[in-house]
Length: 313
Image 1: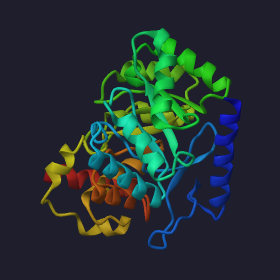
Image 2 (image 1 turned 90 degrees about the vertical axis):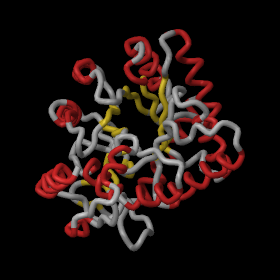
Image 3 (image 1 turned 30 degrees about the vertical axis):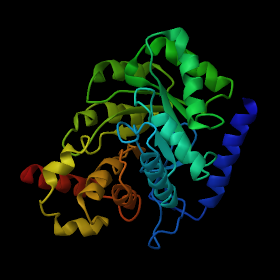
């Protein structure tokens, strides 16, 4: 397992070397070729490792069973994600067959060594956690996970203890904990105040901004990386905005459509490290990854974006 950790470190150093072309606004930004633009990345506070601000979720969208056509589609979505500079893919034992689908895709497109692999432990049986995580690793067909998280705070005390041991042993690189739907923020806040976490994950978007009150501020203060799930409210926000005019000034932040507008709002928050929209549609992943390029809104622009959206929905 120590060798697996060393391989992950070598991958990180190779990635670091690729990106030494410059930084913008204090954020490390490796250069990739997409419309002669710069891939927007942010550093993981506990290591300073750069991560592109758009990742790929798999809840529901990659739960395709053994359907060969659907599995090949997952691989195509993942291929474009990587081609556009993406690295972080997130899954969970809770997501049906998503983990085997990810493993199929990674193997088909030969990206098992390039992915920033993120998964979760999700069981009330503390003794079963290690076995579950090993099964997840085999599904992904990777040497080791980069980040392992406790899913939705389930049995978090025991699982965090296990994850800290795994990190110490070099079996994983980062430790995190998650929640979603805006639930259990009080408990999550208490955990963030006392535990040496590398990552937290929770829901946040342009209309659900409760996380700004405490969690995002606390994460910034504590030096904890933040992954955002449900940036589109599982698609509901996109549906509400369908047919509504994108403001003309959206071009000032290089947004051509609503997904890019909504994602750039999320990842422009100073405490947010990465957003993980989930999709199984190739056109959607292309739209999402375009938010990884161009200008990000500043504080004044973020306020303008909120005001506009609140007026039209």
